[in-house]
Image 1 (spheres, rainbow, N blue to C red):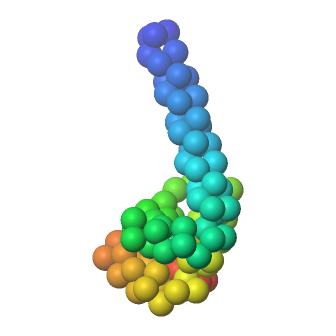
Image 2: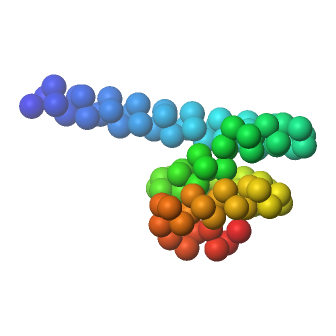
Image 3: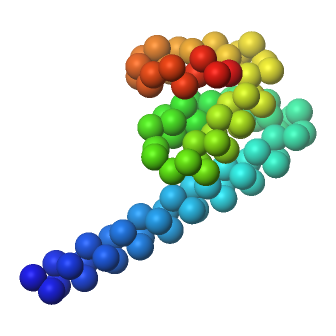
Length: 99
């Protein structure tokens, strides 16, 4: 029983580290996307799809970051179309109406 509690505590700690890693990675990508060439490369790699998939998370800081990033990427029509297609396929909710 004690071992099970210990493993659950370690799992929770690993989960928080993973969420923080994703958050920091998205912050880095957001800062890198200031350059137009890098933003085009992000579109080619499908970053918008990954961001839409991340909208299912429950971390508030991560959600605010993702919505800000999607808002920045939505300047280009191609990214908007990609977001809408991914949104319609997943049925994520009304989150993308904010964009």
